[in-house]
Image (cartoon, rainbow, N blue to C red; front, side, top):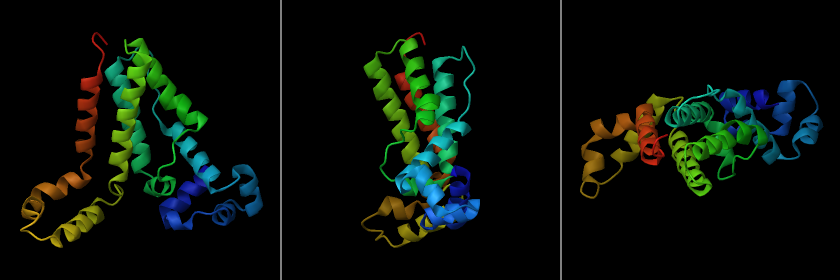
Length: 199
């Protein structure tokens, strides 16, 4: 069901996702999808949990910084590949058991094993998660040219007297809108700042 939902989101956007469209894609009755998911939120939870299968496995013995960067780069890649899912989930938490078991619990365990208190591990996880989620949702990374064009159009509508930096430096503003390296650099900086001594 998650694969069918992902295909619909990729092909037709968030507005196309429903029990009926997923059922049609699978060749089953929409009641079958409804029984499995309960409601649209349940279908979205199923999709979010399926993302766990795409997250990288962390080799045993990896140092904290490498394991952390690998996990969150993997989450970023999975999220940027599915902007429709991000749009539909809105502010709903990502609490599926597979995702919690593949991302959250191992990250917390590695942080505590590296010397963080549980409280510090939770705060660090939350910071990394918010950076990743926010960066993934900022623009549709599947269409960088379109994202740059939309940004250019929005900035062109601004009054240069009121927004001199945004309107006067398009060559600097536009590329960073879709540059994944901006996220990767921010992730590395946050990891470096949070890294426990001796980790």
